[in-house]
Image (cartoon, rainbow, N blue to C red; front, side):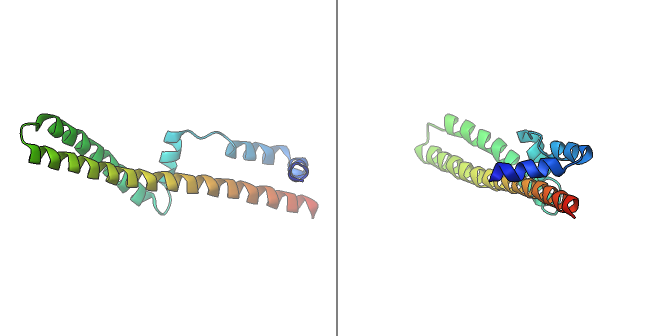
Amino acid sequence: MMTDIDDRIKDALNDDDFEFLKTLEGDRGLFQQIGDTWKGPLGGWSKLIFAFTVIMGLVFVFVIWQVAHSTNEPIVHALWAISGVALLVMIGFAKEWMFARMNMLTILREVKKLQVQVAILSEKQD
């Protein structure tokens, strides 16, 4: 049944409409999807979370350096190691938020594509 609907939509499209829909179907790479999250109403938050993740990554490298060089004092060594685990958890949550936003935008893109197809099909049938 799904192919029948797809075929009817393709038959109803003219060349301009088909070209427009082809632009929406392009494969989007990771960096392009990250850039897409920086736009729109939550763009500022996305930029903040991205910056936060980069800074936490740099701090994590420093913490690993401290863990490697604080082997003489067991308590300091343990505290640096615990800090490293805490940073990893924070980075993980920030990245999870970013990837959830990227997935949401991908789904919205597909919904918009379906809306255009349905509108074109409806217009052609009238």
